[in-house]
Amino acid sequence: MSEQSRWGKWFEDKVFKPLEDKKMPVMEHLFEFQRRLTRSVVVMALVFVGTFFYADLLVSWLRIPLQNYFIPNSWEWVPSDLPKIPFVFLSPAEALWQNVKV
Image (cartoon, rainbow, N blue to C red; front, side, top):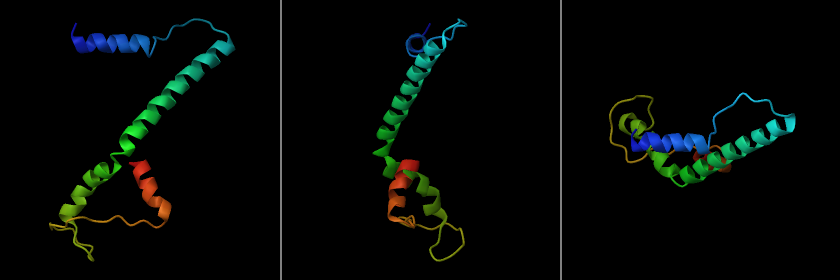
């Protein structure tokens, strides 16, 4: 067994315990649901915080195909060397939400 698969097995056993078909009272089901929901929210928050600081870099990567094929003031798509294509924001908060969406 490779090192990666051993680590993966340990991770699955500790973090995502195998589902068992046992009868539990409703409150125990609710506590398990709360635990899983809390873990999911924490992981999503960590991913959000980790990627929020790199949003500008991610947006610039998404912008690369447009930079190579867009001519300003025209609807034509032909190769050109534009330094940067600015995004248009229709409201002040939209610039922030762009980073959140990425």
